[in-house]
Structures are given as C-alpha cells and as structure tokens.
Length: 90
Image (cartoon, rainbow, N blue to C red):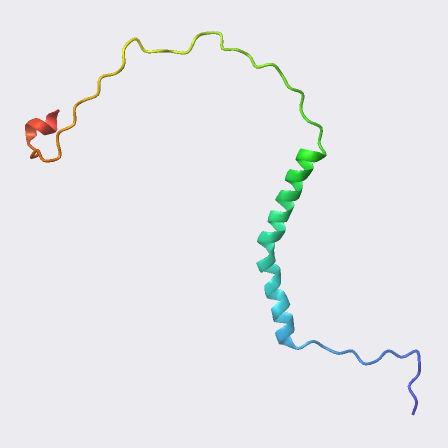
C-alpha cells in the first residue's frame, strides 16, 4: 500500500537523557543571562541615554573643622613588659 503524500511521517520522541540534559542547561545559564542583561543596560545607559547637564558645585557655607592641636595618643607598653595592673590601667 502506498503512503499518501498528505500524511506526516510518524513522530519521533527524544530519549529521556536528552531532555534531562537540556533541562540542566537552563539553570546553569541564568547567571550568564543576567550578566549579559546588566552589561547591556550599562552600555545602553552610557551610550543611548542623554547625559545629565553639569551643575556647578556648591561650596560649603562654613570652613571644615581643623583641630587646634593634634590629639595625644597614649603610650603603648613594650612587648617584653610583663602585664601588671599598673600597666593595664594606662
């Protein structure tokens, strides 16, 4: 008996190992897709979006605080000194 030209050939199914392999590729590729998305948005922001107008920098109304004298640091005990209560109080 001759096959009709309008009939489709029988459908082939994929082996389950091939399906599992492609299922594992999807979660493994998510970080790379996110990285490519962030890099694309960064490029788009730098190249496509208009640059913000430069505004003049406002100077502070008061001068920054400068101490009159440098702070005096406590003297640390030497490494070979035994730790006693007198030295620990310093």
